[in-house]
Length: 74
Image: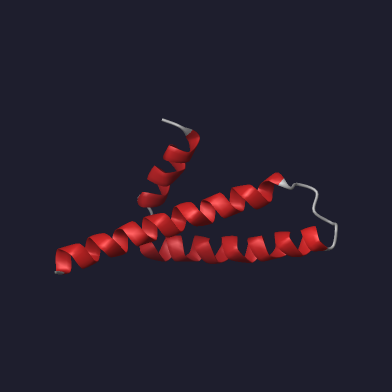
């Protein structure tokens, strides 16, 4: 199992509230990283990509749950 697969499995074990909280934290961090990049203060450029990928993974898990809930409700 790859590193990203393990992170996705870990995210699927979290509650919706935990995922929403983590997503909010990551979006704030993403904003700060973009601000640092624009002002030339960003030292770890790889973190921008890592944050973006983690945001995508969490939104994917949330979307899966919403589709599953909508499918079982119909």
